[in-house]
Length: 96
Image (cartoon, rainbow, N blue to C red; front, side, top):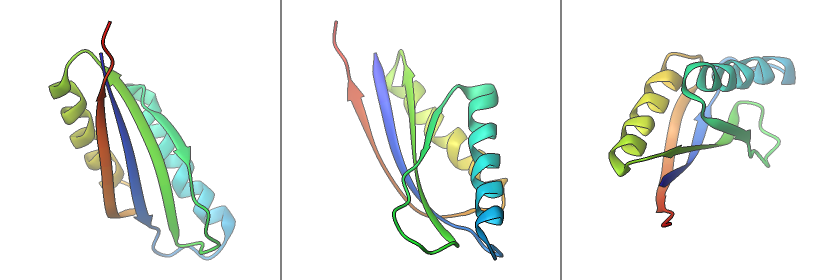
């Protein structure tokens, strides 16, 4: 089994308050969970409303499936109001 762990830094243009920020992040979370079963967490530790760091995880049978999941994640996030400023990821192998 392979596990992909992704850290994505986002820019949230047009955010004026915490409500706007939550709306965008919840939209991303719901989209990722709906059809893809990705795990999502807001890891932000800064007080800047227009920036966020999210963690996303996915498990798959093959390394290639995890790589394709990253491409789907990027595509789905790009369809929201957020802009990706940085992505870091690792793929782990869990042996039987």
